[in-house]
Image 1 (cartoon, rainbow, N blue to C red):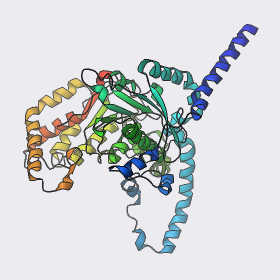
Image 2 (cartoon, rainbow, N blue to C red; image 1 turned 90 degrees about the vertical axis):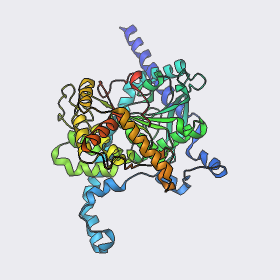
Image 3 (spheres, one colour; image 1 turned 120 degrees about the vertical axis):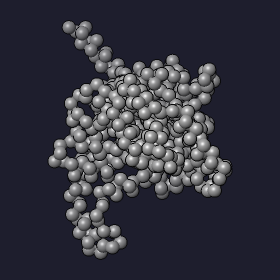
Image 4 (cartoon, rainbow, N blue to C red; image 1 turned 180 degrees about the vertical axis):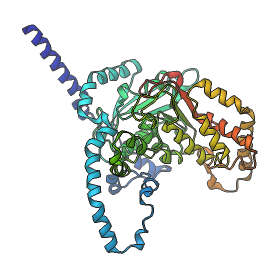
Length: 471
């Protein structure tokens, strides 16, 4: 019996040592890169991004807030048209709701949205995190680095460099920045797919996850993503066109924020991502809490992925997992039947993107046919639907290229050109017949979204990780 107790004590001490080696050792790690390390370089050279001042750094990087928050304010008179007394009364009336929203967001709300930040989960996953980190270092020669964001949070990162051996297709010359989900860590997260596919990979942990400090709120997440992108461009020296941002699940928020803020980045891949957090939050919370839930999400967890996505002008690929019941609003917490993808929030993400980029094609007939195409839950159903409309891929490509060439020949407005060529929206499709408009809409939908037969948390296979379509 004493021998058993002695062995248990040794195991307990070994776990304590692992915890100290994993977290406390990283706290004493020297800082490898700071968010303001690029200010001196930007002053001496050319830079398209404004550096934050010391005063602005405390508030953090810019977030897209207006459109989503404005939805709840419809019907109110403009602030300037109200008297000071009315404004004061309105603030007094809203104070209890604001306090309740704040309390919910900083307690149960944060644990539900970012469960990976809970101390108990980190302790439970500690052996797996340690093994994952050792695998990245030993097998892929990963380099761990500490970055400091503008809010002072320390961000734990891991970089695997393949530029010396880029492979036959030159994949190692491209860097994939991986944005993990709400319970994901780079040690055992979504970076395995692009890493095994042969790309150079940069993984990072959300604030409060693993070795990163702070708490995971959208502002802190964006601050962390900002320093990660700057680290990739200015310290790792990857050309912006060779940087691909890959977001899985809730990581789609930071992925779309990065490409919106740095539109010169090469491509964006979103895997099992949603368009907005509100519908998913309402699915899991009591109906009587609807007002409080909507207010809490809008004020504290405004993950407006679709709005940010529409502000990126580069190549985009959406990966929709056909067995995913986490980012689906159908089923009401019951397991979904195989292939039931009608309530997948990735559908709304695709429709919003195509309507923004190709409004003429996605008017009426185009929107209706893509909505029906999105109900196909398997590759066979998708191919059958596509064949039924006799879509001519070559004709669609020729139409898009012809439109782009005509705009290039005119060159009337220099502001219409961006880092990826002709800026969106494109007015291609005006004057087409209904049949042709449906065909172009289906062609564009198929180029921007691909089905993957997998559940939400299943690791993505390396062959399923592909770069987006380019015209």
